[in-house]
Amino acid sequence: MASEASSVVVVGLQWGDEGKGKIVDMLSAEADIVARFQGGNNAGHTLVVDGVQTVLHLVPSGALHRGTTCVIGGGVVVDPAALVAEVDALREAGHMLEAGQLLVSQESHLILPYHKAIDLARERRRGKGKIGTTGRGIGPAYEDKAARIGLRMIDLLDESHFRARLQEILAEKNAYLREMLGGEGLDYDSMVGDLVVAGKRLQPHIVDTSRYLCDALTAGSKVLFEGAQGVMLDVDHGTYPFVTSSNTNAGAVTSGCGVPANKVGHVVGISKSYTTRVGSGPFPTEQFGELGERLRSEGSEFGATTGRPRRCGWLDIGVLRKSTRISGVTSIALTKLDVLSGLGDLQICTGYELDGKYLDEPPALADMVERLEPVYETHPGWSEDLTSISSVDDLPDNARSYIARIEALVGVPIGILSFGPARDQTLSLIPPFG
Image (cartoon, rainbow, N blue to C red; front, top):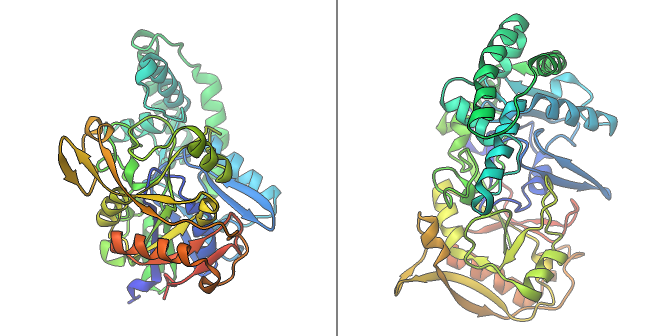
């Protein structure tokens, strides 16, 4: 039987965009398999290797390591055309040249053109109350999954069955688009042709990934489970309704990849040294004006999928407490510490005031989160450039004490430090695989 150290789960601890792609890419050097367990191509993981930037949306971040098998689990919703385009781009760059390097769950649900049309039409109707969706059709695809009317990767393997089911479902979706959302219907013939072509391209990759992963873990293979977004965007535990449509916490590995809970080992939570958020929703420590702009500029805070500017603010410990508790985080990877250089005194949000009461974690109701007053403590900053350091001993005293203060407040050790986008701008203090 494999020990628990043979598997590691990586999750974001904030509202996504914490730098998971880089950390997964780094840990993939030790892993035999990297498996994605939820989300869709609304996520974007940016990797920088030898000065070349690669942005992945569906393929796990282990794609740039030749010896690593990448698995898309059944909890992921897959846009077939987007996946084909991503695989083609990787192959053109010299990656993923063997079919067996990418395995896609036969149980993954499909994102289809009507899902994207519905997503965009709903956001238009919401106006100022929009959620901030990327328009990639993620939510409507998960809705169909829950309503038991979704189409899955395995349906693409039987063309006549797929054609018949698509025609039946599209009639209902077109009526909804026209009559309820005031949009236009979609053409079946052009849609089905493109999907059948994409299905034939993906057919060699479609397998029972649950069995593959369970067998690999039993055999002692090192498996890295990769999530998308962050715990504060979890559909159950995040700032609902300003959340994504899936469970983003570490517990979702079991359902999203079809592996038993006793196979889940270490959980690495990723957090920036400050906080960001994309789209709508409450953000207690958000900073406006010069400070917010400086964090955005210095941290290159623009969405990898949409290019939208991220909202920026001070580090929120209440968010980290909640996220680490829910996901059972065993160590934290702290990213973008270099961005804080030269800011002067730093603020750390240690809790909140709400209607005269102190809270150490954000509440469940978004309207209440919107009314939180952050309780800050001041921490001395540093001016040194951190992008070239090679040891913890090279860190300024104030940077080391900042790290130690985060560990004390959250109650979880920091096992990885990141000081920039490149692979070598990282220090591993607690090796997750042991």
